[in-house]
Amino acid sequence: MPKDPYAYVVAAFQALPSPDYVPGLEEPEQAPPSPVYIPYVPEP
Image 1 (cartoon, rainbow, N blue to C red):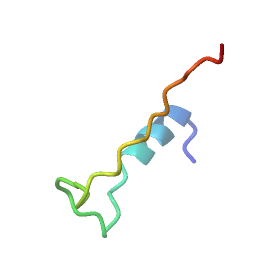
Image 2: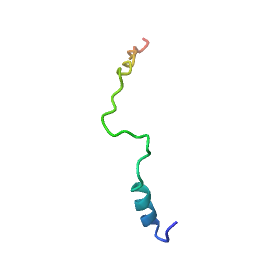
Image 3: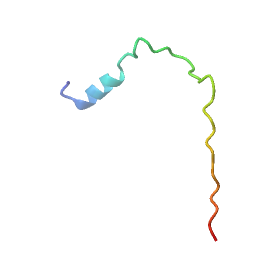
Image 4: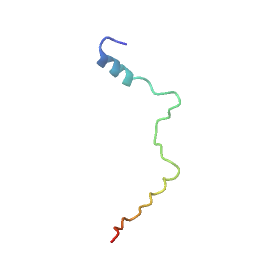
């Protein structure tokens, strides 16, 4: 690890992406299901 911690952080963020990474749009084939909202009804 370099003496300067900031230089280490900069070097870590400049690392090459993993070889199995494919740049581009990553859209799921189908959108996730919408959440089910249960309305709040206060008891009398």
